[in-house]
Length: 513
Image (cartoon, rainbow, N blue to C red; front, top):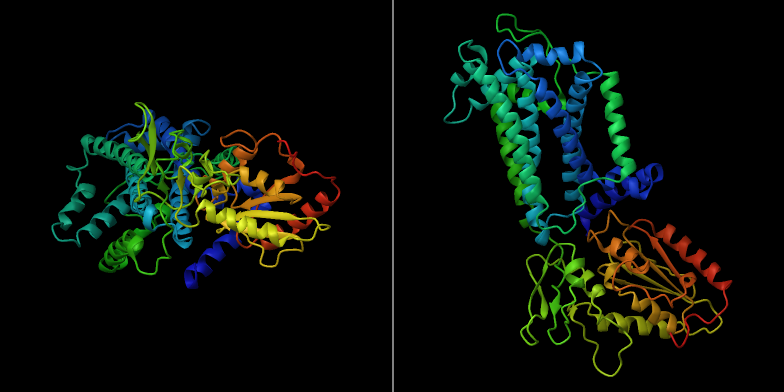
């Protein structure tokens, strides 16, 4: 990533590192914006159900029932009403930030296009649902914003100012009108949930809940806000007494003042803005695509490990054409494959120890192929020719921190994702004479390829196949996550690892392991 896009991504990463210092890597809200937005959605749904039970869908009761929640039940329904309002605002803010972050990081092209295009409409859906929710209160704010919105729509062909009578004509404002508002306010979130399901459709194991400390902390913050500044209604809607001032929720209703001042300009900005967002995956200037994984039927045993590990659901299992009945074969969907190599690291045949024939695996990338990675590792090990020096191999990924000037006795090799390195490569390096292997890459929760870091942790801990064998001395293996921009931190970790290894005695790996 270069140019403006590269600078934008570096700015995002700099902000995230600043938040890491406060919240820690695994509870950083900037790294879990999508999950936080889902968490807000569930809070909105839960609090909305409480409010709906008490809501009176009638002309006489709509305003009174909502106002009574705050004035007469401040510790129950009133608290739920305020929580509903602030969680709705947070949903809009977090969805906007999530959209912006993914755009700045360039995560909207090629295999990500469907998630991007299906995610863009979720923001206007959330705002539309919030606007209808304010109308249900039926106070002066509801009246003013309803008239302003329909006057804005009247600028479009096929619409007219007659729509405004739905808000100012007593004959149009009936009990059925409030039933329709309630139905719409429930229907839009259902569409939002359907859109969210489509948004996650091509992702394996999507993160829809934030880390527990972040979930609890955000809920407590909303509750504190609801207690300190409870949501209140304005006076009952009355077309004969138009208010001089309207208290606006700028997160939900902020577009209306602009629409009232410049309706045509606002429509153009909205249509062009949404159109540009939807077109972004196909704009020129995309970086080169990574090659798609290829399955070798002769070496695929149908174990399903690559199927289970693929972050984007690009692998399915089909009947094996050249084996006994019931045998299965991995099959790659080229449109979904990211070329990350996570599947390669999951393949049980991906071992560097085989020397009698060309290194082939059940699934591999055309570039860098596993044979290429082994050749690079062999060359790096041959370069560490000082028998007295402490030798360290660093295995990392192309999207994380890299050592431009490695300390003496250190070599660093990268692949598209750290998870492309099978755990057996660690054992292979130790058998070849290095003192230690440090594994690095993007951290869990912010992996460039979503799940690679999580799988690496589980493989090294013996919780996921293929696992790092128990014979490998764990004191000679270290795991340290370091994003791009954290080169100094990675260098410090490598130097500390050197010192720790220097204090150990050899051998590195039992020769008969």
